[in-house]
Image (cartoon, rainbow, N blue to C red; front, side, top):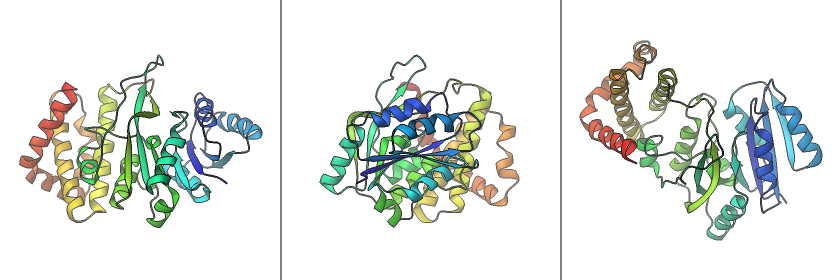
Length: 305
């Protein structure tokens, strides 16, 4: 019997995929399947995965044309046979007892979702301080990416919960896929619990870093683009909170522009070339008095922790 399906989207991950697979094979439970979806890699990722699969029948390789990690996760989710789902990117790892701990807790308490704390792994292999955050829907909409995030692989989901609530990765969103997915999860009001003070997920830093002006502009553009997309597809209180989040982001972009950390010319077309986005921009200006205290709080949070 397959207890848990680990779904791994993979694109040009040859330097990392072996490390990721080893972390799954080291789990303290053995009733798992690992579905690795190669998303049109042009390196030798598929050959490495095939070698593992030839020696371990629990590892399965699917191959598709490049369509993004969201479509790869959905393909894996569609054929998953486990009672529980673990998403795991091809360059990250999980602690050896993670699946056993979370699944035991979920079975004991009838939970739909659990998540652990996580650790950042530096380029030299050292670990940053363990990080963890308590999230609800309000904190998710206002504070995701600001007061903290939770990486995909910190979570374990009950497959029945995802399917009953039609929760999947949106292929229309190419930025902030994890944020979008977890808005759907938390909106479905799951029975959820965090495993505090336990680092179950290891998140590896990108060698390129993210301190340059160009990369910061790309990050901000991606965040704004996602919020604008979500505002169009959301109503009620969630839409208002997203508008408030947009206003906060625009204040931060303005400050970053003043400090010459963001190229405003690459961000302004998001608004001036789209009438719906322009309306959201105008409304965000109206909300600025409410957003300013939030911006000050996040500024203090980021620069004093």
